[in-house]
Length: 220
Image 1 (cartoon, one colour):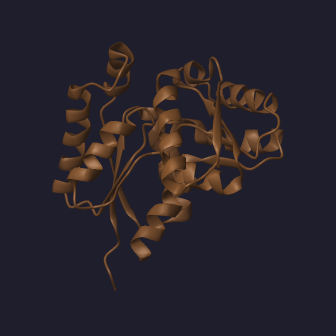
Image 2: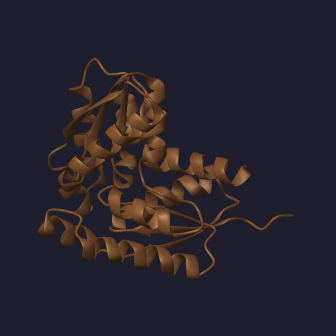
């Protein structure tokens, strides 16, 4: 029997850890995940205002460390570091997934009008750019419109998950005319049940989509 894939989960915020662990446990129990966390990355990015060379070096360094531990694949869970993660993916000899690439692909399959609910505003611009790049790569006509759920991230970091979920669901109810709604971050994924109860369009989360893509990669 082949060994279970060893998957490194690299986080920039503690609130991303539990959502991906839950999805892996339910959707891919045979995988062997482990966690690496640098919770200074997100505040450093917010201060810098852009993905600097230094931040890119740190992301690549985390990926190289994960590879040195014997990781068969790497999944980053912070949606604000897309270009740095792409650099790491080019340099390593194992699959390195950006947090949202699988969710973007799934959203494009739903139609041409896609909405995204953001709770960490510094990630918005880079995610929109990544979506456009992915649409061009896949030849998709899909277009993205983003909405910020104000106060949701602050509630989550304060330990008030119900308030976070309610704010995200409230924002979803205000969105009309889209083929699908994406919940932008791993930390937003726990709000999915509340959002699905509030609206009828498909709701996509990055942990669910990422785990599904990883499973496909290791089956091939």
